Image (cartoon, rainbow, N blue to C red; front, side, top):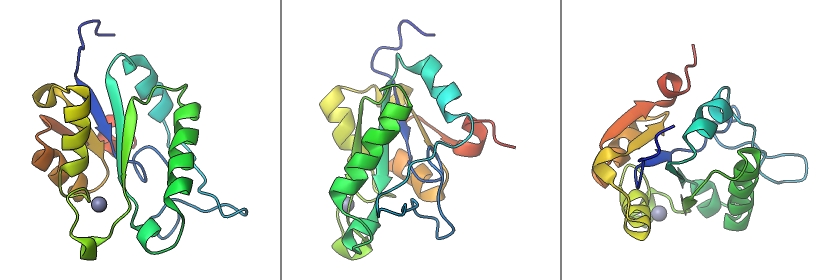
Length: 158
Ligand SMILES: [Zn+2]
């Protein structure tokens, strides 16, 4: 524990970083048509001890634009993730767009990180982003996050 963590944040990608993906590399849909959140190994064990940090989820969900699921279903899925993590999430941002929308939020752009940082007064230089794809690393750089770590390393996956 770091009692002086202050406004240092951990920005986390969702699918493939915190939660398991299906074979199409998207969040899985259950029999009722809802998004099923299954925590990946060691996520809970890694995050609970650093819950004194600000912890955010920043996720691209072009499935909303493409009609795979609704924004409300993504919100509900992240709320479920937060419950599975004993409520440690400080907040989250969802980009519901795809490339054609040319939005400022879709990773590899840094818009979601910048907005969360401004809202919560985050010390970006001292903060970390964890993700499973190069676009997460690029978003971290674009958003000014001091350090990027791949999920496999961060969570100790073999
Ligand atoms: Zn967007």
